[in-house]
Image (cartoon, rainbow, N blue to C red):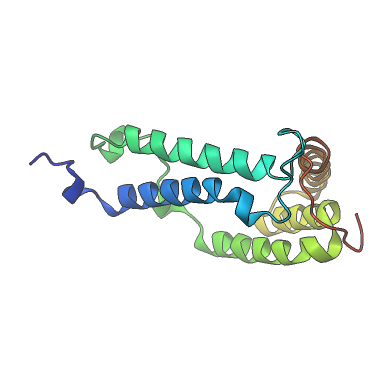
Length: 161
């Protein structure tokens, strides 16, 4: 039996395969998950366009990652980041901020909650005020334009924008 047979797959390869399969399953179930499904809308104007695109990219990326992992790579030969150097306090803080951001979007609106999330993230990570303000303004407006205007993702109407 080869060292990379089905029975010897490491947990991370199995996880990548599982995520790819879940993304493929959700992609196929999209018409039943989005109600009402806009079957008569053009594919590029459909509310299902962005979710389907993201799920298809997740499937393709997962399969590509499995293909890349088909042979063992020594850590010294890898381009991957060393996770032992991560600042867990900052990572957990960002996770908490993102959780608050997800809760804020339906109430505050996409643009204002994204700007607030990016401002809080920059402050939490220790960026300068000038860099935080500039990045927050440009990224929130840019992401709003892409998601709301180009991809036509509906976020509901919040209190603000």
